[in-house]
Image 1: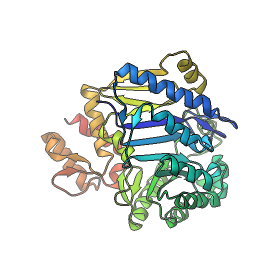
Image 2: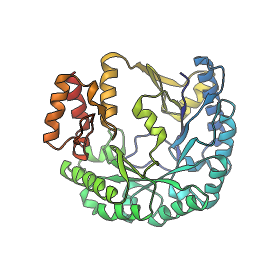
Image 3: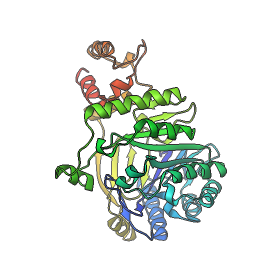
Image 4: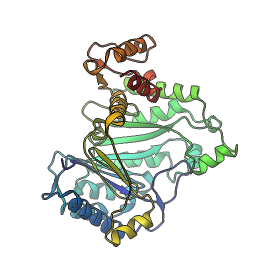
Length: 375
């Protein structure tokens, strides 16, 4: 089936944060026209390769990065015109765009709303100045507040805030204060990500050289559980491991990933899933652009998700959401294992669905492997 969910990756950032392992191209002058041409070329190749004879009928559009707010004045409207050659959508579409506070203005917010963006994801990460400097962020606490206000002034009231937890304890970051300041802005959605030291990042090197120490497992767990409690008190339901939302404001786009729906990813490093094939593009902007300019697909690799790998993935994706797994689909061994989890506080009570608690989500990977092994 043709995908109804489209992701577009904007690889440009003013600088690369020391913990970032995304497909990012640091630049002060993003080549917007070149990026738009590449998007157009990749969409054309995907349409031809898959034999799609009519425009895609989209339910969600997600413009991520990188820093999509670096598309600048007119950028989102120009992107819309490119997309209209390959896709259609109606007023019910969820169109998300990511933004960093330092490049998101009231004028840009209005332009995005006029272009069709109706959901904003803001990379706040923290409200503490020392922490923001350590992260390499270019905005201060006031910038985060101004971004939310700019979005709402433009009529975009579906605002999500990103925060990072489990930072090195030496930074003295007050996690409770960050949560309180984020929730005081009354976001519709909150995404929380635990800091990790990826091997190819400066942070990964600092940790290997002993120049930086990551937060311990106890700190990670305590901050995760505290966030779950505080968000619930503020009226946001934890509907997925890392995501909290007010009723009806769950991310429909991300929901496609978690339910195994077909989706198309465009841009450096972007992933696509056209069952049973998952594929992903090369990550470097220069190579990605050169491939498309030469009429070649920028695909780097692909894999077939079938058999045992598909079964494990279904279990893992199901357990990571609040919907969980249908107990009727479990084998007797799996059901017995699930009952043992309940006594340890890892699952919620309920007869028809197997749902993890926040404590269970802390060990999601382990539990998914155990449940798959009991099939």
